[in-house]
Figure 1: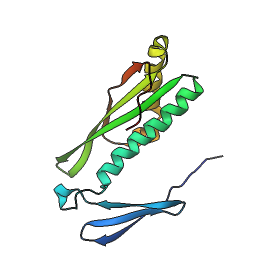
Figure 2: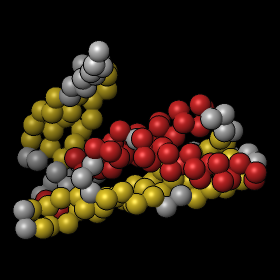
Figure 3: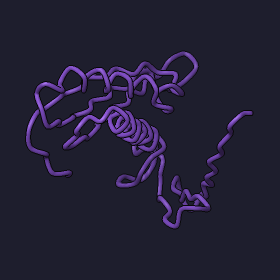
Figure 4: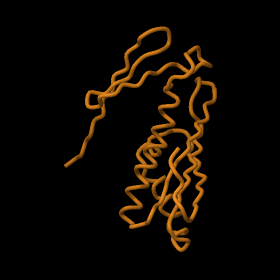
Length: 150
């Protein structure tokens, strides 16, 4: 038996190069624009930011599941993503994503295992596996006190 899940969103154009994206089961909408470098309005989410955010949020969610299953004590986790957009012969595309997770664990003796779990999370993350650009992970593992979320 196959398992299939569907995630539906709708984007509405509102004015100029801006719009609103929504999903039926989510009460909040997101205002978006084309990037300013493509004639959009500054200060709004862009499709490019949303794609990078999809990678960051998927990685964090996946790592938490992997760490919980492995009973790794995690004090804090943040993941920065830089998406590299380049113009090629067929137009613009993301060619690379730099994924920089910053993980804080409780014990030094868990450092090597934490590194393996970070690599596993990158490998099984749904968004990572769905991207055509190369994903380069540069992880930082800290030991000690949790760093407050920003």
